[in-house]
Length: 406
Image (tube, rainbow, N blue to C red):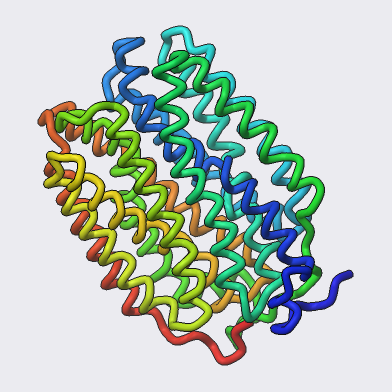
């Protein structure tokens, strides 16, 4: 069994924990949180044009996936804590990739779309950073923020590449072939490195809460956990609603499909930069205070997107949203490990994902309904701005790290 991580060993590129990080990075790059979330909006108009569905009807598919993620995440987290990542992550990738491939065979009934997204939701969260976070965190102490950020950077790179790739594949080959290509990427990229390199270090996290150890009950009774859940819930409505409809919104404002995909790709680039920068900052500054500023930046991005009628303004909005969103994604697993240790890390992460996903189901449907009834996203983008500001203020209620934080 590998020894516990030390500050000196973590600085070496030969330290075995970095190999785990590398595999997790490439897995996260083709995960549910990267490949599906950031391409959903690109397929929105092609699907409505092909089958005559409304935007709200298509958005319900994302909501179904999000609701399913919400239902299964605590159980996935518990399984990850008990059996480790490989027995869970590899089957999840196989099921997720197959479901994405199946989208190329849609024939018209809405239930086919909804069934595919239900399966995607069953497996999706096992492919994300939740599947890898506990294993990665167990290898690192002094460089934990950076290590988790490098995993999240996979999502950032995917968020740059996948929307542009999907748009170009749709333009060149049609949306069916585009789904085939994306599904093949999931299967060929997500499984091999996970099987070869992802291992737990065997490090057993000591709970920073003296009265409760690392028990789930102890964490659920702590204020920090529920503040974090509240932040995730309100910010998820805003973020997921915006991401899934951003390409359609910019297209409605007169931009071409390529320009809308480019703006989404720029958001992904800023997302990547935000993740890496935040990981470096988390190892040096108090996480909740940093999160406050990230959420404030994201709120400014939503305000800019509501005003965007030209590509330059859309790019500014994309950069602000991407920086805030990318950095905020790093904060959750880091804070969970600092406040509550590692013994029940994946279970707690799964519970937070339940609330995040429930809100994520609301956001896209809300955006679709507002558009279908008013013909505009303006009102709901103003709501997103307000929700991000509320989330930022909530972060100021987080307590200091416990003295025994690992």
